[in-house]
Amino acid sequence: MKSYTIHFTQKMPISLEKAWDFFSSPLNLAKITPKSMSFIVTSDYTEKTKMYEGMLITYKVAPLLGIKMNWMTEITTVREHQYFIDEQRFGPFKFWHHEHHFEEIDGGVLMTDKLTYGIPFGVIGQLANVIIVAKQTQEIFDYRVKAVDEMFGKYK
Image (cartoon, rainbow, N blue to C red; front, side, top):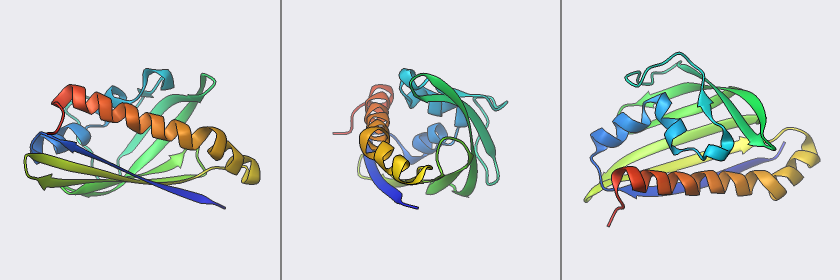
């Protein structure tokens, strides 16, 4: 099976504490995901719920043609104020491993994401990645950059 790895970085003019507080709340993911994805966290968490190792998070998402799908990820690793990892347990991908790293820099925080994923259906999945998935994934992270800049200000 073919896998794909993408790296994304973003600088934010906020403290490490504030960045960690925002990104470690599962409900905040919906705030930085394009509305077109119809992304909804269906787990019974509140705004104050913070992630922990072993946490399961369920979602409804419509990644393609408005077709709603169930998705579940597990937070497999948490190193407070450094990084956390989420992995798909079931959902639209063959596998999904997403690392979120946070590093204090002069004037803010550098957030680095490393996403490794695979798509089911062999050659058809590989073609789908070329035509749809890779582009859509880039668009999701581009949207996130804009949403985070709007929330916290642009890093200078």
